[in-house]
Image (cartoon, rainbow, N blue to C red):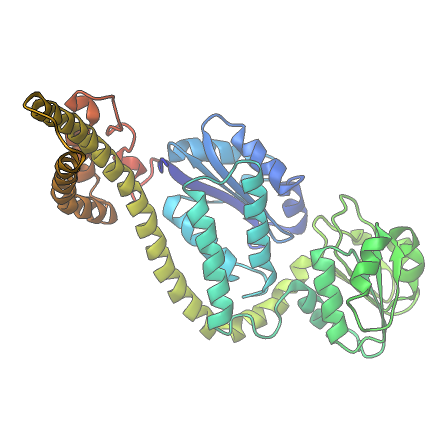
Length: 436
């Protein structure tokens, strides 16, 4: 294992970008996006999280400058003003915050932790997760789980699906109305469950693959049916409340698809599922992701106390993560130290045994005594330096580690060249300042 390099990240989120700008930043898929980042020769590891509210890219490179260049190319299709960047430690902290729900439109929402986990699996499948991002992302998932089990951060509105239903309820009385969910993916399922928990009278689910819609319908107790997307216009005309959440590149609902009665449409699609001109149809109200911001702001205020608890949790867990990574890097140096010492020990043990054999036979028991004594000497001599090197890594004392590498480099002792200070330079020390 060779832990080196720095993490750099860039993101386009609901905080900085409009719906159309988010759509422009969204990659074809997370695995494809990770592969694109890894295609840069300077990129060692990569991780991409793409949801309806954010597109985030993390890379591990030799220097931060290399990372910025790769990320600038990745987000070349959106205005620079909507792209936020973060250096090494800020990138790691932000990832913990994302998984905990602190950066979500709905503060503390549950969906994001599953999305972080799926993005991890996607990145790992194409070789994007290595010795630095592996502990970082798994720590983020761990923190996200703790936040939801140890605080009240996810009480009340817990997803955009439930937020969509509440937003619609501010415009119409949803009691007994016909509702329609367009899309049977993760967001569509969340919307369907939120509607099931409300008082709608009937719930239809439309999806390009009707079998998928039927499988979701089977989990919903509210009366209704599953229909193909080709029948969308017919059912959209009849519905009073419509929630769209597809992955279509083009709008699936337009002004010709709505009825001539009071309707509320909540568009959760990214990019948009609903043609913007649909909102100009009389008695038709269309909300999109930007409109959810005011509603979710109320939830954020209600959950602020729990959010403060999560902030403290993240601070502690971030310190633990840095310590873990720094010690892992120190362990590489320690391994090199033991390798050098073991090589010398083996050489000297063999020399001693040969001398003893010149004076007579050496029994297996005597040979074992000599070897055990040599092992004990090495372990005792290196015990204190081992602890000192781990402490030095935690304290960012990379000068001490650099000195240890030079002292115990096998090349200095007649062996094969081992790690040197060139392999773990000070600027790569976790927690150290990155280059400009």
